[in-house]
Amino acid sequence: MFTGIIETLGRVAALEKEGGNLHITLQTPLASELTIDQSVAHNGVCLTVVAVQDDQYTVTAIAETLQKTNLGMLQKGSLVNLERAMVLGTRLDGHLVQGHVDQTATCTSIEEQDGSWHFHFRYDATQNNITIAKGSITIDGTSLTVVTSGKGHFSVAIIPYTYEHTCFHTYEVGTVVNLEFDMIGKYVARLMEARG
Image 1 (cartoon, rainbow, N blue to C red):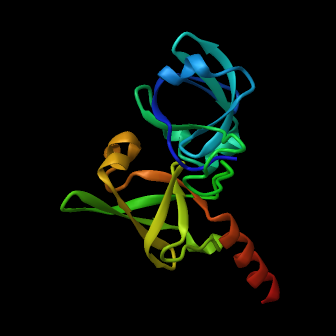
Image 2 (image 1 turned 180 degrees about the horizontal axis):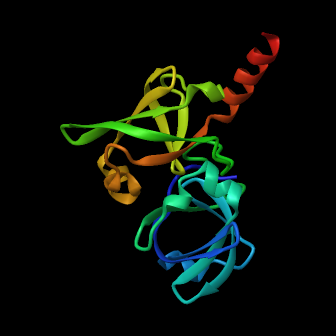
């Protein structure tokens, strides 16, 4: 489990294909604190650390993960949002995040608003995921509050700290991001669907 509070950014140092898998090596000061078999969220995708050396570590994404997330679009030098698994007994500053991406979305517009930014995203509504205004959404692993919500689209407001300390400062119109919808909202949607 994660909180959606990004600890730091990692930079992709190497990408190595092996069959349908992709080995991703990241450079980050966080590497010295990691151990093999530890879970780390990468743009919201929970992956297992398989190697650590100096200020770099490696994780492996399987074919299904590459198809359903934006990790297959990474290039050498790309920035990645990083968060280690939450520790029980500490404050939950974001919301409960599983590290299981539901689908991707595309950034459709960015509006600068006197010191903050509004990012608008569109996603495939046929997968029956929903957002609600003032509800929670996880974008590339970042826990955020939905500002506006409609069928297949929503917006979020980004403060300067979040903009600077996550991948948001790299986003532009057309950027593909990972979405994990609110866990409670997903259960409610499935129950409603089952009841017809």
